[in-house]
Image (tube, rainbow, N blue to C red; front, side, top):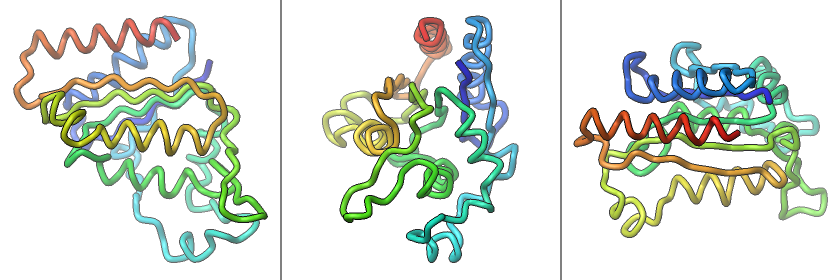
Length: 196
């Protein structure tokens, strides 16, 4: 399987970067190929341009501004997103990646009858999110209703791909996590990805 591994964290020494390294190494050891897309290192511009938004319903939609990343997404069999959750949401750069790359004629097509969209990422068989939260489990799940998981699973995965295997692994309460807890989470990531 060929995996597009997307890292969304500005610090190369971050825990998210170590999760991405662990993920990549585990996948390659299991015989998969990995394309690491480090959004900050590649200086990805998350801003949806006026032309991109203005042409959202054009057929065909113009993805030329992000064509190299679109090609990488279309070449992948699986997508793994590695990111921290800030304010119970994606980092802005990851939200911009979704806004600009998961575009018409790439991730979905507009239904000619209106109202619905038709999934176009039929190449993507798995979508995993490897994430951290500064908040404890109960606050993310009980109080906030786990908004990132809902957006990824119910929105992006279901609307853009068919029969995609979705999984989300989160390390909660990251701000107070001990080294032992962080290492345990990395082992969890290794175990989950070794089974892919």
